[in-house]
Image 1 (cartoon, rainbow, N blue to C red):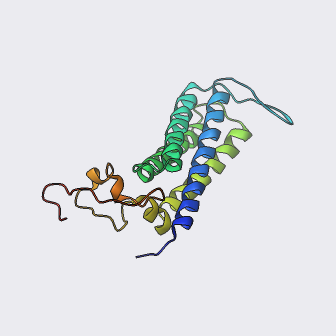
Image 2: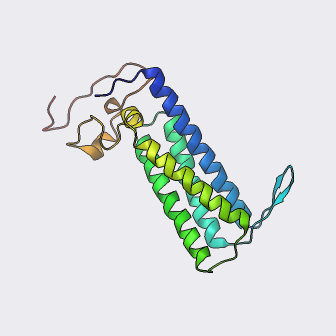
Image 3: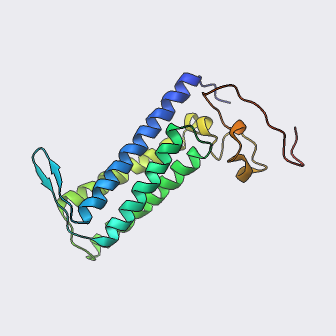
Length: 179
């Protein structure tokens, strides 16, 4: 078992939460630009072609990533699952967007191409970060040292995760589960 201090786990949690929030913000901006909204910048206004399908996918990515950021930053029991699902969905969405534009199914810009490639890299790195032992230990990822006999039930059991807030208390076991 990996020994990690509570302070280090809290720092990892904040870093993951900030990464998720930043990813959500970029997807929200991308969704707005694909609605035809210009985003003012210091050097000009960011415009993208109006693509409704891209707006829907980017909006869903923003929603899932923002929900995961909330879960991570507020120490919810389902944080690791939410962050993993959000990253997986966003990676799939970006890949669909890249393939659709490569097939000529919509207008594209250099900015859009750069964004797709950059956010894909960030999302893949984020997903890899979620697979590290420190992050799994923080939220009880799939391969952590938590009980896997009742994995779905464990998502709802705050005593089954590492928490930096208050002492851990063991609740009564489920029927048939060892005490």
